[in-house]
Structures are given as C-alpha cells and as structure tokens.
Length: 273
Length: 184
Ligand SMILES: C[S@@+](CC[C@H](N)C(=O)[O-])C[C@H]1O[C@@H](n2cnc3c(N)ncnc32)[C@H](O)[C@@H]1O
Image (cartoon, rainbow over all chains, first blue to last red; front, side, top):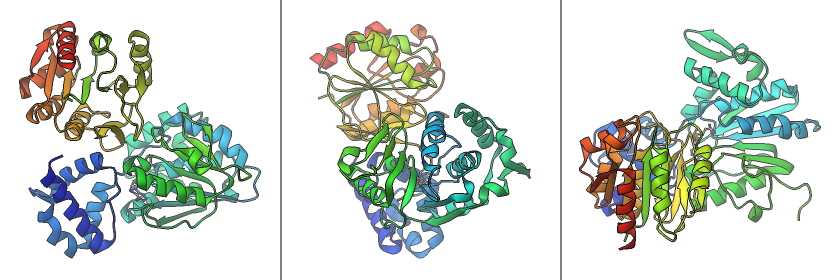
C-alpha cells in the first residue's frame, strides 16, 4: 500500500479513537483498508482526513463510520455442519447442567442469535438458559433486538436450517408483518443484549458455551490473541468455544482442546493440565 | 522478483487452471486461486488429484509458503494480508460474488507492491477485470485466457475491455509463458 494512503488511514483512525474511544489499530489491514476506501467513496472525499472535522463533531457520523468498518454480514445457520454439531454434540453435553450460560459475541443483525434460540428451543433447554448477546455496534444490537428479517434472509435460513438437520417448519418461528419476518415471542425469552467491544472490554461472565464466529477474521494476530485469552477466562471448565470455519487459533497455547478441528469447536478441559 | 501468482476463474475455468498448475515447477512463489463454484473444497480435491504441488484450503491468517497452492474457501473473500500471509473477510459480495477475484487481486497487489502475476481464465461474469487492471497499473504481470479458447468468454472479455494484458493465449501458452517468467 502506498505510504500516504496508509498515513491518511492512520490519522483518521487515530481521530476516531481519540474522540470516541473506538480503536481499530489492531484490525486486519487488508480488509480494513478496503472498507476505508469504500468510506471515502460514500462520503465523496479524496482523503479520509477530509472527514475528520465532521467525524469529531458529529457522533452520528462516528457511529455510521463504525458501522461501515465493522461488517454486519451474517446468515441463519451459516455453515450448516457447525450447527448440526452444536445440536447433536455440544448442546446434549450442556443439557445435564442445572443452569446454562451462553455468550454470543458479534451478533450482527441477530441471525445467529435466533439460530441458537431455535436449537435451544428444539432441545427443550430454553428455560434454563441465559443467552447473552453482544456486539461492538449499538445500532446492530438495536436491530438484532427487533428480530425482524427480510424475505431472502429467511428463505436462505430455511435452506440452511434443513441442511443443519432441522426437522421443524422454519417459517413457524416467524410472524409475517409488512413483508418482514419477525421472530416469535417464545424465541425472544431469556435473551440479553449489550454493547461489548472485544478489543477493549473485559470478561464479565462464566459461560458454558461461547459462540463467536467470523469476528476474529477482522483482527490481527495480536488482537486475536487478546480475544482468545478473554474467551478462555470467560469459559467455565468443560465449556465450549465455537469460532468461524476459516478462523485458526493455536488452541494448545490456551490449553483448549479441539473437539472438532475442521469445524472450529474447542473445549476447556474439566481439569487444568 | 515475483512474490505471488494469483488466478481467478469461474465456469469452465477449472480445466485450464489445472493445465497451468501442472506446469508450475516446485519451489515457486505461492499460487492463490479464487473460483466461484459453490463448494471450493471439492475444487481443491479435484486439483489435488491432478497436480503435484501441495493444494491447501486457505484459512484466516495462514502463512504463505513457496511451492504451495492455496484455494479460497467458499462463501468468504480471500485476501493477501502481507506478502507472507492470507486473510479472510465476510465483507459484502463484489460483482455479486464472494469470494471475489477483484478482492484477492487488489489486496495481493498492495501486499506485494506489484510484484506478482495475475491470470484470468474462463468464467461467466465480470469479476476480476478491475483487479487485473489494478495489477497492471501497479507494475504486475498479467495474463488472460484467449476468449476463443475459453468455455465461457465473459470473464476474459471483461478483462480485455479494461486492460491490455501482457499475454493473451490458450491455457498451454499461458502455462509456458508463466514458467518462463518464473524461472528466468
Ligand atoms: C461478519 S459479522 C459476523 C456475524 C456472525 N457472527 C456470523 O458469523 O454470521 C462480524 C460482527 O462482528 C462485530 N464486531 C466487529 N468488531 C468487533 C469488536 N471489536 N467487538 C465485538 N464485536 C465486533 C461486527 O459489528 C459484526 O456484527
């Protein structure tokens, strides 16, 4: 990358950090750079530094910038094999606990949140689960809370749900209103949303299952390391960690065990080694 | 010094890709492949059967090594993070596709400062044309499969409309020239 392009990006991100505390310094550079170039197009400026006055004086602009550089892409039951493994291998293990804490980090619009809720509902565990859902982006959390999804999202979801071993009528989990599909009331229970930034915030839970898929890909190796340590601290012994299909961690280093290496399902041993 | 070889193809591009990969000698800079087929791990096993070099399914933050072939996972963009490392993103599809050839080609150009070779083979959409132009604009070497020899001409034609590649030819001709560049 050209040196002045890099400098332009660094000064801009530095301002975002100084004014609002959002720190993207340890985000993976290649994809971050592409989103920053798209941001320039969106605001019709030649340099990101042209945006700084607007950025530091208008919180709405800052929130919008954060939305553009954190990526909200998600799907119901993305990578169906993973969800099948959750359903058939992980959830049955948790079923014996009197009470189950689950943390889902990086919820996007909530596609994965409600995928989890569907599995928990179908396994009959809803009543003893507390599902805590977080994301860096408050706008996404607000969106995820509404539980409203578009038709194409739901159609793709139905397809993936079946591939993931779902036997019920996927559409029965939604009410149709004004062309949107709204998650039914029973699947909205035992659910708590809050803003949590993996790059800055601390551990707050002892979880039996942590699901954080396709968030680590946005981080460089040093931030990935911080976050996996945070997950490790936040896992109860015998708890599970599920990452995205292309994400790789040196799980040994964190004393985690690979339950399924290809699907990125890890566990924290019951006894320390 | 060439630091990476990046190949983009879609419908009808697997055979020519294999023809070319078969000719790449051992120990060359990493070869990175983006194709649009729905299940890319099936693609990599087909290539693995035909080609002597190790064929790896690419994953996030994977270290690149000379002599290997890396295939983009389906549903994710594949990027070059540095000249020695790959990365993955779930950013929006570009040209309606994910993985997108443009995304790989542009990030690979930035990561290698233009020290790379880009190839566009048969395919039925426009993805890759912007990326190939970007490679050429930054001093990289470019090759396009001759549209008349491609099963689907759209992808090569789109590239020819945007840039003037160093070589246009059949898969065999591209393979020969590539080996020439790599070994001279
Ligand atoms: C590509 S989406 C993944 C959504 C979903 N987990 C999936 O795999 O389908 C990435 C999500 O990570 C969130 N994110 C990015 N940086 C974050 C951070 N530092 N802390 C918490 N969440 C973050 C984004 O806001 C976005 O919702």
